[in-house]
Image 1 (cartoon, rainbow, N blue to C red):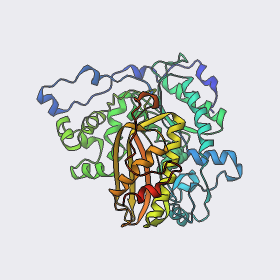
Image 2: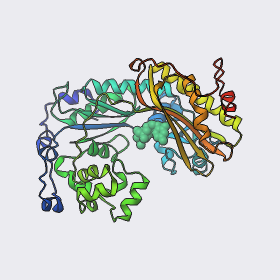
Image 3: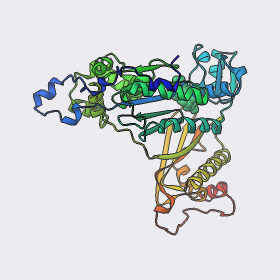
Length: 418
Ligand code: DCP
Ligand code: MG
């Protein structure tokens, strides 16, 4: 078992170390060579040491940890199996039945009637998350959390004085296990894209290293849906263009890819060659803050819509206040019964920093939807263009609509729309 911090200090030859000092193997684009545009030096080298760590079945594993009777059972963390919630996380035992994240709980229950359902306990997951982030930060300053359970670490320079990224990854996994009792999988490579792909290849409790010289070959066989930034719409577009794997992408020039996929085209051109120059950003700025809910039943009545929005605005307002931030743009998200999803946004230079400001603008956004005429299954509110609250000048606000001011009385504000 290598689950021992001493592993780091073992006097082993650093087998994997030197590999990261090589330049990445480039498969030059023939079209690019024709156009005579030389590859810049920066795109030719990518000799960083990047680790991606991702906890295994995170919420479910924490539940098993805290309640050993759940261990080994098909466990689902999510909403009410008899309601309309979705699966947040499921144990690997549940996955053998075809259950996965984001699946409706009712469907998960049909697939696995013996599954144990538990409700999420976010505070507890945050607590464990803080523990693992501290472990990451004890290795390097350059830690970019992606969610509660995963992060990129740039260990090209690190606090451990260790040259082998692979050994640092083992050290991190060992410490996570020792200090939290949970397993994590890790991927090691020379950039974020490859490290993330690597961490997912031997889950759970796995470590995968993609050395730079194997990067291009590895990407060539990869189905495009595994590429960062490829959602189902882009995947369809790629398939229509005959692009199914990384190897297919190599046939296209950067100009062609930009024409097909806009700003992502350049990125796809790079990763097809194993190149991803995105830095690990230690202080990734949050782009938006929001909350949404799938309703227990599809709703039509305006009173019901208002009641839910009031709840969401109160929650979001409290979150903004607690974090002392404000956002200049407010977005209302609405999913109708047929799953059509729309968003309506408005921007206020004075910023949204609390419930009252959110409620003041909501009637206008709601009026631009088909609420009251179409049944709604999901509602969400978010603010973006975030700034620290004190960064904005104090602009006296004029509430755009009647607003009681005493309570968060969205209903009367909405009725004031006439
Ligand atoms: N999560 C969620 N809703 C989703 C996906 C994930 O609430 N649609 C939460 C629950 C997960 C956690 O985020 O436990 C981490 O997400 P991952 O995608 O890393 O999934 P897991 O850690 O559960 O499993 P894996 O072992 O595949 O990483
Ligand atoms: Mg995970």
